[in-house]
Image (tube, rainbow, N blue to C red; front, side):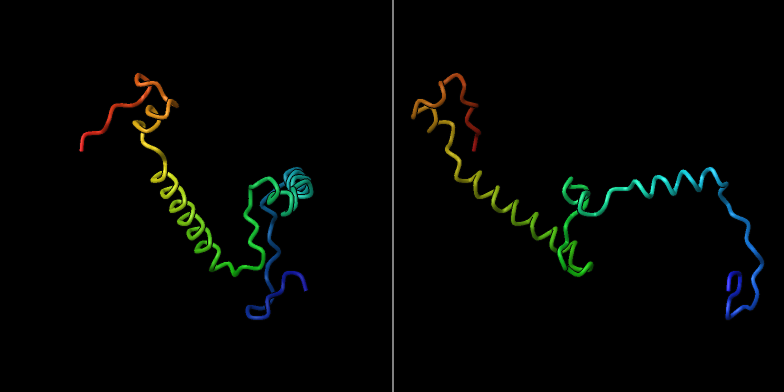
Length: 101
């Protein structure tokens, strides 16, 4: 039953807050909206593949932390500028100045 609420009884008919032209535009835009798969493919949405919504943020933070650790490890393994000059990869004038300890 339109306009009827079980708890409060009959409700007055509400006037639409949007005119017909606006409603048509909205319906058209909604019908043209890309589906979830397309948004995931374009990296607009994350694909959560069966993960509980409460855990999604924790998963993202864990992945970021793992990436930071991997990058930090890779940077620590990187050769020093002096080694690159010694191996002939850099010229002495291209090497950054040595940091004072």
